[in-house]
Image (tube, rainbow, N blue to C red; front, side, top):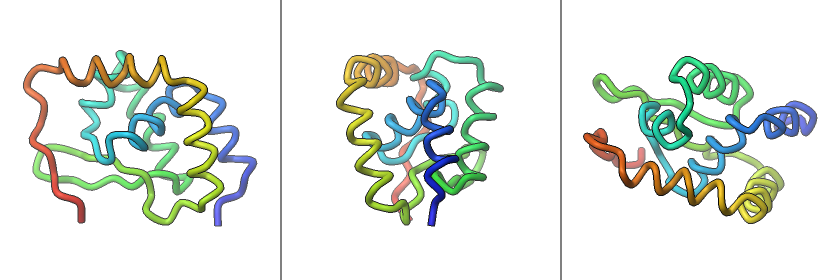
Length: 114
């Protein structure tokens, strides 16, 4: 069970929130894809992803040289509802990130869900 206080603190940061919204829409992404989509420094994005992982909001999986992230499959319904509301409120930012992602050169191969 996730405590609401750390969840809302996590969502207060734009990098973490946009990473979660991108994962909510895309399903599973490599760190490099999230970095490209958010147009942020790799170290900052990776640090925020680690915080989300430690909080229990995302899971990471290594596939060869790639580390992929996805929303934690056991996120409570209330967290998913908050993410959906945030995605609606920030539709422009999500679409901008998705557009950047679609133009990413040499994207890593997609990984089947496990």
